[in-house]
Image (cartoon, rainbow, N blue to C red; front, side, top):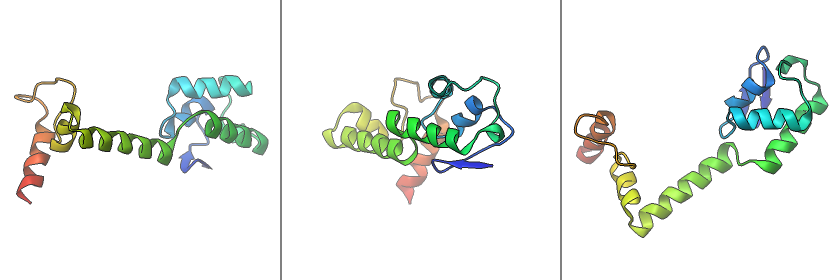
Length: 120
């Protein structure tokens, strides 16, 4: 196991697949990082050198918001929506779906959680 940006990467997986374990790095960004470094598509994590790990860390930290930074930005955006009192902020606060999904038959889990939190 290799440890990078607070995430354990599986040593037996390809680099482009293992990088997707980092919060904020999806398949497309993982492929972009590999292309910037000139890594092969089939190279595995356990075949990387220390220098290549440092380069991956450098590229990700310079170009992308990941892990705790990204979570902080998301939470700040949600708090902003709640504070300005918009519809999406209200739905976040109530624990309901935001984007127009129906709640009569679906979204039972969030309605159940809302019921528990209101009663507590």
